[in-house]
Length: 161
Image (cartoon, rainbow, N blue to C red):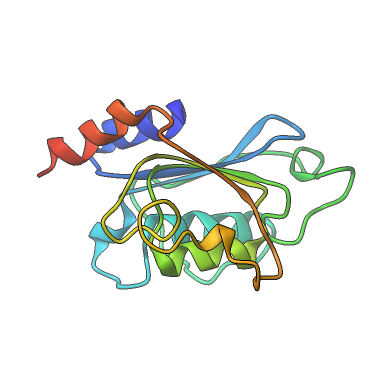
């Protein structure tokens, strides 16, 4: 989470997302304040997921966004349990702000292992509104932790209000 907060502070952004492979301990990507770029789908979580896809040879968006980083990691460092994952299978996500419904569903479809977020959002879909990760009917589940570096994450929002 410290990487996410540090990147958001550096870019004067209200949110940031870092995706980490817990098996190798390597930071794979960071995305910072992407929703401010005017594209309705470029929420910071979605851009971070797209950057992981780019790291794996895919990705939908070709634009290079300020503050977004795809780290140079080996194929070995991307592996989870000895295999290259499908999208974000087994990866951990650190978000300064609780993801909205659209971003939360993208995290489900990307098969993350765990989400850590700093502070709630009025449109958040995990702790604030829908508690989506607790819905039994979904075919994937991940663990969610709220309040990681909460004061630092709330300060990001307050600084730009």
